[in-house]
Length: 512
Image (cartoon, rainbow, N blue to C red; front, side, top):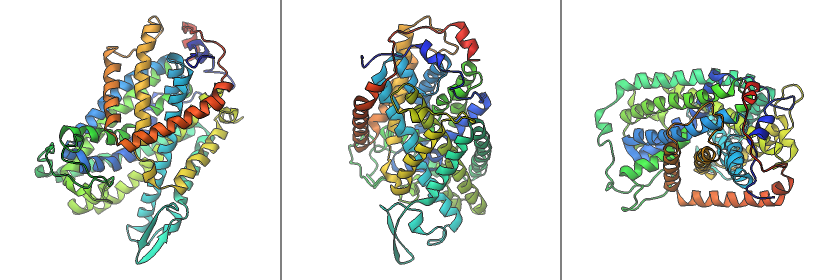
């Protein structure tokens, strides 16, 4: 069998409904909330200050705009695919229909970096902030160090040396959200919508109150000169005088690569395509609507944060996530807002984990139905019609990372996996436009091939701006994935036809 054998559109559509299919329960409002739930979380509260302090300074707002533009180009391409192929699996499914099985496998494997590793990373952050809330910020209070840190971590607290054993809070939140996903997508969407309303409200309160504390001097200079002195950056590295990505416009681009993590999630909407009530209309609205709303909030949030506190404050270790630090230090009389922000961070982390686990289980579900993964990943619950076994196996896999590894292990791998998927989706739109120009497209990406090409260029630039060790780690991950493909997936693939077929009007009527 050819490595580049493709799955026809007709084959994909034939799996969309039926007793063995996922249950269609999500409308456009739920999909927008799903996107916002995944987008506003660790990125906004953690990455904003890290990008500003280490590289972009006040111009981190431009970093957000660059990242948003790259996401917008990719989002338009996702929207076209999601309206044509409303099937679970996201970029994996789109690659299977346009570029062949081997490329689809590589994308599916890369999405594990985004969803599974992303969920593990965020659950560790959730544990940290939950302990901070319980302890009131007092060292040695709250959950004992041993039970909220990995065995690879140690610290001296109140003069006593402690070694981590297991990160129990991270496991607890992962288990709770996994069980919620087993219960049903609609129930998960309701909980997510409630969380979204609460955390967006808190973000808006911070923007409204913080605006009155903005000091013009903190935005001057707005763009840090490229010749500014080298500094010890949050990731522990130093950048030389000639390093293009240290400050100036290079620093803004590096900042875009960092805050890109804040946009991860809108593509997770596409993994729920098979559970949308009217996918050809609802999917573009969900993808692009959530992206637009979050971009506006991000620009306002980053402008206020860098106006309230000088960006230099965020260079120091321990202050990369310090929205609460900025409030307590520079916004006198608003200590209660600091507590609210911590609550918003916990809510944000919770919804991000929920959507990441949902996205990963749906990618696994689709890869399993194609035979590229064992059947257990596509077994549906007899009552809830959710891939419950996949959800629980995913809990064990993600839980192992969260319980026994520190957050730094994940690094920027989540971002690089996502950017790679975005590039492939942009390429896929151009391939499908050329191969099947008469294909029924309920939503069409405008200005093709300009929009996909710009998406490819911007996303590739952000990949290049990421640290070399991250790129090497991603390459090693891909090599492992290819070994699994040739050792298991290629031999068990269910694809029996290499022909491509066009969807008919009746296909779309059947899909709603």
